[in-house]
Length: 68
Image (cartoon, rainbow, N blue to C red):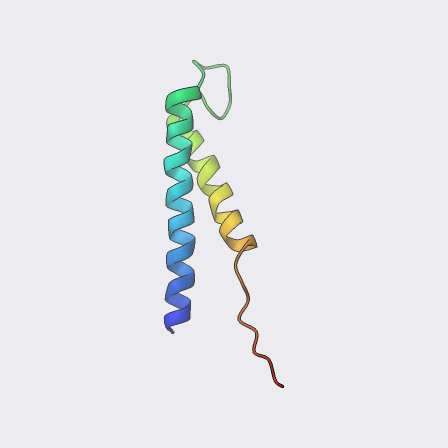
């Protein structure tokens, strides 16, 4: 059960970190309205949070037991 909590916490941290990075990207590099993603802070945050969740899912290690 503890392993499941670690996976959920890791995924949540990647998503929250992605949302924070999305806001920072909007704040420093966002455009005035011509860009579909970076023109609004919530769009940028959602987009990068989804990417953070995908990165967390792809880089997750599987728990394999060796039977030697």
